[in-house]
Image 1: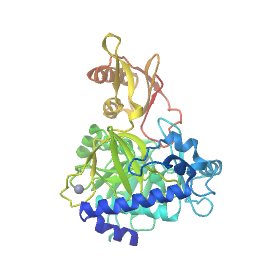
Image 2 (image 1 turned 135 degrees about the horizontal axis):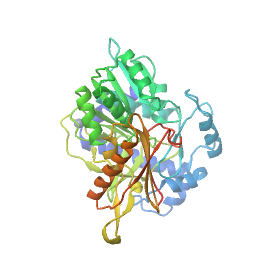
Image 3 (image 1 turned 180 degrees about the vertical axis):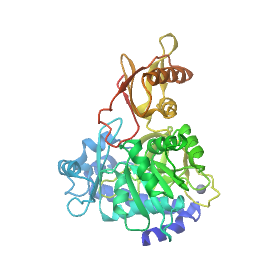
Image 4 (image 1 turned 135 degrees about the vertical axis):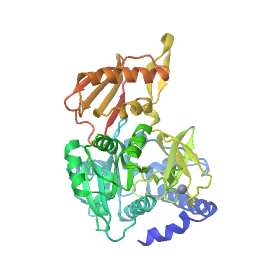
Length: 424
Ligand SMILES: [Zn+2]
């Protein structure tokens, strides 16, 4: 792909060249937004270009009609289109690929990509392949993905859109029972295994327990923060160091190289700032719905020191998910302590009996619903004690109430492992 090759020089060139390219694209992005989006025109009127305000997801969704730059992009029509999307790569108005971001917190947002924007997304996809050593070659590699299969989600849309035969691929739905997934994987014998961190973590459990016999040389996880327990389990199961494919529908893309020094952000496509510890991004590729100084909310650090791989791209380190997921829990002497959800996710990901869980923090305490893959009521007690102990290390004094459910309510359509809600 030509766009891919012309960008390679930047990726492995000097950081100065990259920043120059970025600056020019940023200015062009702002010019386009002011010309074509009434919302940005209003926001930037009389502002110093060096000091543009940040925008929130809430503002953009509330003012969708003024935000979008193409009159065909009407929110009601887009929502109807997304609702009807199955697992096929169907275009809106014959031109746009439309996806939605769910959200454990906050409302859904719709994102439309025209052909030029989508081509940029595919550049990111090719880069992931290169970062992880998935170059097309003969004999064709066998690549298995364990994610959601609906076309409304970015990760699966990539699969649909790039299924051109470079690899032999097997697409599995992360929401299916473990026995079904392991049987399919043993049949397929993947060279590479990609999927949600939670799904791959569960499969590593199956492998360690002797219920899954495969030998992937490449393992990469995506869409969720991967807890250290899961990383460790993948190493023990398959003897490989897993990669991290970072991608958001907003078009912040990146991945770690063979040195695993953090997530190289594809900075020729996205300008990233860390403001008060939180990620703010500008997409340099979105034109239909410009995202300029958009508040992503994840807690992160950016490292611009050179990496041994020679890439000019800075690395995100310590990405910890959304800052607005932070739980406020009772501490000693009536105080309130803020606890990051990783304090809950991390220990729960180490409990092999759990299939999925949901944590709700409301006024009368912390409620945990768990869906089990094995074990019985003793698991609930163990989870309660484990969480109590881990939360105490963060200064919180709570005894969570743990309830075993047959199947978690399907309000988590992506099939992901965890869901944490803060209603307190
Ligand atoms: Zn590197």
